[in-house]
Length: 593
Image (cartoon, rainbow, N blue to C red):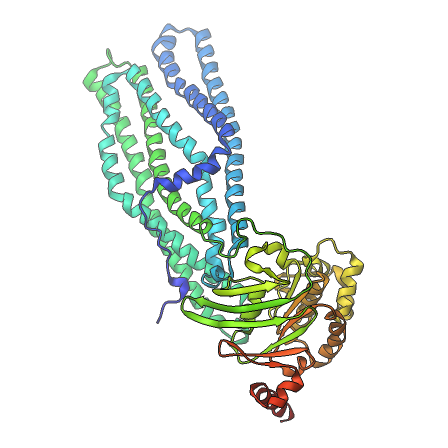
């Protein structure tokens, strides 16, 4: 069985590349003040906590033998105070770093979202939505803690380890070497599992990405799934992807558990060795019981930062792999953007001129070649022809969703490549066959293209496209809540709402791409009355396969063979008895039969 795109793992196998981490410092520097404060609090907390074993040594070796109850109470109170102060400082630091981590998440995620809003259609055509979402959500979450707490903890654990070593050697040099004797064994364990550990987490990331991508598409296509009774097959695919994720997780966990398992056992062995060496080899005269208790306390503390450092290093390596994917998305080129010095397009009349325009989605495979035509302001132009001939491409170039490969494209004499995108698209209205409805009220959806529109303007637009009647039939009328993609609405109702949204923006150039294909004949006749009034004074481009809907257009262009094969009014093209005549006659015969 062939693998589908959800089974294709992303390549996260890359060495630890410090340049990605340095690039992330841009986000870290914004939080440097709270991070410095948090670091100082952590260092102070750790220093206070490290004094406890020394106090215990003094109590055991001096205070208790002297039977000084007052001093014992004082030292006990001091130990309690160190615990309380250490906990308070750690709590304050934890709250600060939680805020820092969330601020870093916010900054990275905001930059990602802004960039995704500007990326061309081609980027989304080439990737499953789920694999884009996992970068914005999961990958950002995965690196946030490393970029905030991770950096502080890494430095802090190094200092903590250094402080513990100083305290150890200050108490007893010989027992300190007993504690250090376990380090070579731990190093062998880490070097043995390090590569497997990294690959394990990479595998988890890939399986999670595959599962997320398939889940996203399955939810979006649930109607088609149920229509073709694919539920059982889809459940099988999901089960396989979920099983792969679970297996990857369990395998990685088995490897990861070797680190704390090794530390726990080494810590136990070292502590036992301290008692053995201290009591039997050195003797109680040189290694008092208080010294042994202090050293066993430091031994327990010594291995904890080592465990933390090994885990942090693994987190850093994995975070760099995630950062690479995040920055890869941020580095995706915005191919459709304003040129330096691009000027604002003034209010237009609507004249559209193609001057020897050539266009190709893929290099060397032209969809249009040296296309030239001129549309006067206020003209209605229909684009007809076979599927895939380039009708939608023509209107996409007018909206500048793609850059032309050659030639020039003008609106009112302004070269589109020299003007600002926002000023161009704000004067255009585009109605597509696939009408997207956003979560919110019907009022919000119609107002989407003109946020300052009044309720009266929204209702007037809805009346023009014959949507007002069915909207008022809902219990809450225009305030009716609709789900994403308008699941509560019929396809025709979604198109009418989308039509109202487009018309409310009051565009100078109107593009209708199969906009009435899902509207029944009766509604279409009513809609046509409103459209005839709306199209007056506006340049319009209408793409339609049903020629009966475009025969009243001022001009009909038959798109074929990488250009315009025929052009003229309905009557003129019928008189030519060319391609348009054959297409119209075929549809007329089909309607009769």
